[in-house]
Length: 125
Image (cartoon, rainbow, N blue to C red):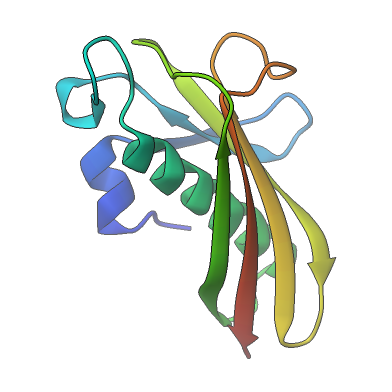
């Protein structure tokens, strides 16, 4: 899967996760900064959306389906600092036309996320 231009603009990269799946990595840079010393909330939200799409695409396999986000709810739990940020998704339900996906973003410890998201996608096969 190639990442969309927005992900490329932010500097997001795909890398292997500890459980054998894939996750996203966002290095800290001036283009993703918000208030001094912190990540911008929009960059975190974009990272979460891309992580959900990546996991959904992995679940769909080679199928040439069009996925369209319908809802996106982000819970910001703590400020993202000036360091590498990771995100991974989890498909909760994959139906024939609708998918529900969760995503979390973390920095030092996956058990202490900086943000979490819930997304609903329409799938056109």
